[in-house]
Each structure stands twice: as C-alpha cells, then as structure tokens.
Length: 459
Ligand SMILES: Nc1ncnc2c1ncn2[C@@H]1O[C@H](COP(=O)(O)OP(=O)(O)OP(=O)(O)O)[C@@H](O)[C@H]1O
Ligand SMILES: [Mg+2]
Image (cartoon, rainbow, N blue to C red; front, side):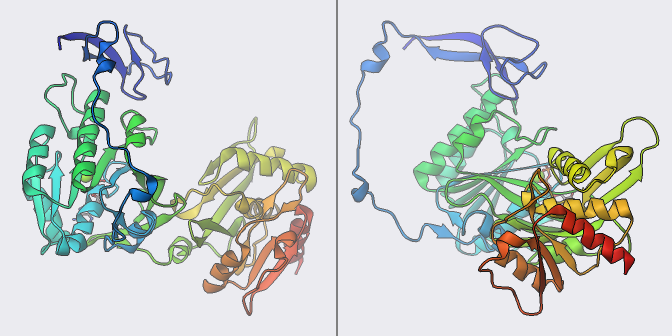
C-alpha cells in the first residue's frame, strides 16, 4: 500500500495532535509543548481498507479457560498488597516517581525473590551493566536468575526477549527507549507511546509480567501522554520526601485489585525496607510538649494509619492573614477555619495559620477534619492537647460532627499504638465494639471540642 508521509504536531504533555504549530496546546493549555513529528498514514481510496476481512476467534465467556495460579508473590509484602495480592502473569505495570526516589532500587530488589524461580530480564537505558551489578551487590541480590541488558533500541530488546524467553521483564525507563523508524527524540510522545505499545504486545502474547519505569514531570504526572496510563494494567506511584527515608508506593490504577492500598518503605543503605507499622514511624519524634499538635487516624487501603497534624497559629503582622498547608487539602483547611470562626466564635481572621502533616504524608480523607480543628483550636488558645488523645471525625458546615467509616478498625489501631483516648463523632459509635481499656469520647458538635480543650487548660 502506498504510504504518504507528512508532519504533525503532537503535545508532549497530553498527546494532543494538530496539523499546524501553535504556541499553546489547546488540549492542556501548556506553552511550547507541541513538537513536530513525522506521521505515516496508509492512503486509502473510498474506504477500501475496511473491506479486508480476517477470520476472528470469538469465545463464549464459559469457554474461556484460565489458570488459577495466575498470581505470584514478589517477595515484598508491601508491593504484593499494592498489586492486589501479588504479581499477575502477563500484566504491564507502570512505576512512576520523582528522580532518585528509589524506582530502580525497588525493581532490582524484587529480582531477589522472583529470580529464585523465574528468569528475569532487566533492561536499563540509563545505567551500564556494571552500575546495575554494583547496586545489586549493595542490595544483596546475588543469586537471582537475572539477565542484564543495557540497551535502548526497542527492536533489539524485543529480539532479546524472544530469544531469552524471560518470565519477568523490567524496563528502566520508558523515556529512554527508542524506535528507529520514528524520527522524534527519545522521551517524546510518539516514541513513548509506540515503545509501550510494542512492549505491551509482547507481554500479552508471551504472558510476560513487565514492569516499566516512567519519569514524572515537574507537576508530578507521568511524563508522556495520558494514553500511556490507559494502556497498562497497573499504574503505581512511588512518592515521599527525598530528604526523609520514608517512601510510599501507591496504586492509582489497578485492573486486578483495589487502588486504595499503599505500601510503606524506608530507604536504607541496604535498599528499601518494608515498614510494617507506618504509624509508629510517622509518630516517631513527635512534639509532645507544645500546643497545636493533634493525632489523627486515617484509613489507607485496608489499614488504619495514625499521623500527626500540626498547626501554627500566629498573629498576622501585616495585611491579609496567611494560610498555608502541607499534607492536607488547602480548600478543606480554609473550610475548617471558616467553620471555627462562625460556629466556635474564634477570631481567626487576624491570625496566620500554617498546617502540616508530619512525615510528609498526604491525607485526603474528611475524617481528619476534627484533628485539623483540634490542632487549630489548640494553637489558638495555646494549650497542649493530652499526648494520648486521637481525633477522628468529619466536620459539617454547621459545626456538626458527621459519621466516619470503619471506626472499629481505627480504634484498634489507636489502641495498638498505645493511645488511651479517642474523640469520635457520637453518631458513629452505635454498634461499635470498643477495645478494652480505650476511653472513647463521642461528641456531636464542634463547640463541645472547644469546651473540652478549654477545660483541659484550666485543669
Ligand atoms: N550507597 C548508597 N547508600 C545509601 N543509599 C543509597 C546509596 N546509593 C543510592 N542510595 C539511595 O538510593 C536512591 C536512588 O535510588 P534509585 O537509583 O533506585 O532511584 P530512581 O528512582 O531509580 O532514580 P532515577 O529516576 O534517577 O532512575 C538515592 O536517592 C539514595 O537515597
Ligand atoms: Mg533509576
């Protein structure tokens, strides 16, 4: 079939395609992201391309057979949990994260266990075999059936996969992969899309489980078009503060499991270590003798996690009061401040308020509303909250306390971590089994919290 070549402009951020150059992408409103690329298109006259038919293989649902043994453990429980109970054979997993966060480390570490029984091919477009070997030695991955390849030509990689027939393939990273027949540079949208397509075809055809590392842009999204996320079976983000050793692996898409699970790791010189008790790590070194600190309990996936919310409330020096937050939603914080002003008559309009969740955790659950309010009240009236008290509950605009889910699970985490008192919405307490020795205070409005914290100062 005669081929016609022409150029198109494709947005590097969102994949938007246009015939002419524009400064601003109409798809995502970013500037200077449209890049010229050669497009090849089959020429068709009167739609004749559709007329060719092939025999297709349609199956009834009942006739589709599958193996029960489709999942296997990666040897890292936290990763298994995020994947929904283990690695699914033939699945494509995209692992995104900031530079240096530990993506290559995590993927090399899973080789240790998987490599005992399975053949693994680790392809790096960024590091030489020597560098990978050095890291593998540091991480203690020595006896795995692991094959290394430092290469970025996709066609050659596919030849190697066909020849070696590995069960697991790791590609580090997709942005360094290159297809010769596409003229644009590595990392551009057409390259990333086509390379992923090629890897996906071979993974599905040969039932290979494939991990693909993806770089993220400065906004935190995976570099490359969003179609990349649609193509793969599972998208994991590896996040955390680079200065701190704490790392969180989060699933944002999973075709074989829940996306609510998180895996918690700690970076050490021996690589990533699993953290079985994240609450303990988050609360380590917490400030027990200053005002403005409250402990909240949030649900991450299937477990409760305790975290510390800190509020700094200081008189405004000049002009409008400042509001800043890290780890909680900004709008939610503004809402809580407004509710406290109106329903508890706190004069916060001439105070700067800064909120922070210690440990770099990001919480987007409304059940921490009560903890945010408690921290602000404590900071404002300058009184310490008892160090063994935990807050949980959603606050409505009328200052009323709304019910929260999974109270039993939260209370058992509170008890496990050695706290003695939990302040919860009264309406959630019905039919809830309270752990022995835990004092649970049910409140139904925000002013009750204010009264409780004020009384506490007077004692
Ligand atoms: N010798 C070492 N001792 C302790 N920690 C180390 C050592 N070498 C590397 N690290 C840790 O490993 C991190 C780098 O991990 P890794 O290379 O897996 O990150 P990455 O996400 O793959 O980065 P990139 O995006 O650059 O490929 C460093 O930030 C550092 O914390
Ligand atoms: Mg890397």
